[in-house]
Amino acid sequence: MNVLLKIQGLAKSFTLHTQGGVRIQALAHLDLEVSAGDCLALVGSSGAGKSSLLRCLTGNYLPDGGSIRVRHDDDWIELVGAKPQTVLELRRGTIGYVSQFLRVIPRIPTLDLVIEPAVAGGAERPEAEARARRLLQHLNLPERLWSLAPATFSGGEQQRVNIARAFAHPYPLLLLDEPTASLDAENCKAVIDLIEDARRKGAAIVGIFHDAETRSAVATREISLVEGKAAA
Ligand SMILES: Nc1ncnc2c1ncn2[C@@H]1O[C@H](COP(=O)(O)OP(=O)(O)OP(=O)(O)O)[C@@H](O)[C@H]1O
Image (cartoon, rainbow, N blue to C red; front, side):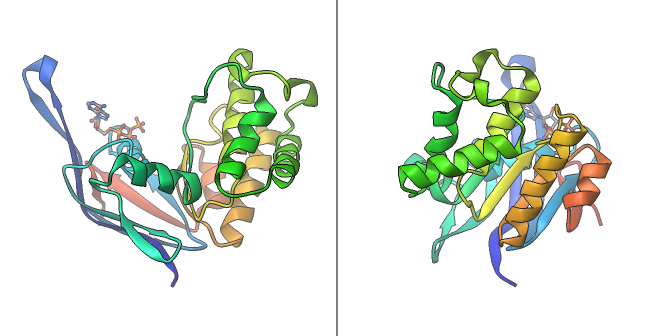
């Protein structure tokens, strides 16, 4: 087993300062390992902690305790309490993330937005551009949109730009937060194919897939969260 992600005793709570200091325990004592070729689906009812876990794995949420170790080249990097530069370095080459909404610098053309992660990950510009073009084509994004910034795109078009960026570099660890939520059946299938291809090439994938059909097409494993803990 080529383990790429090790989570031990992970805990995350929120204190609602504006609401009498109420404390919500989103994750508690979570242990998990994900290997190359795994696609782990996070399941559980609304509020169970699925998104909180993904955000801890991207380095966007600082956990209260526990450890998240990520294989980065030949080293293991501790993400909990890591310096911002370390988190950025992990995002550049090791951790790819599809969020539910596209958040990019405004006014940059779509093609450049998809080329950028591949160049940041070490690809030469012509190779990165060829890959970006293949991805946008695969995701059925009309070529007339490639030179435009995606601010005015539809929800589904923006989501496909988001997905293209996450697959522009062969990230060993991919985090997917409802990657097919705003897509029709044809585009959903295109994304499923990308996920499956990355997994076969050895990516370790953790995702939230509310659509049961998508989940059963891509997941090799499921973990059910109940109040922030893995259900027995
Ligand atoms: N930024 C935040 N501030 C305060 N509480 C939060 C925050 N993010 C999440 N929570 C709380 O943490 C708990 C877990 O939320 P989380 O979003 O991780 O659940 P989820 O399983 O992803 O739910 P859903 O399926 O509805 O998206 C919930 O009780 C939620 O209210």
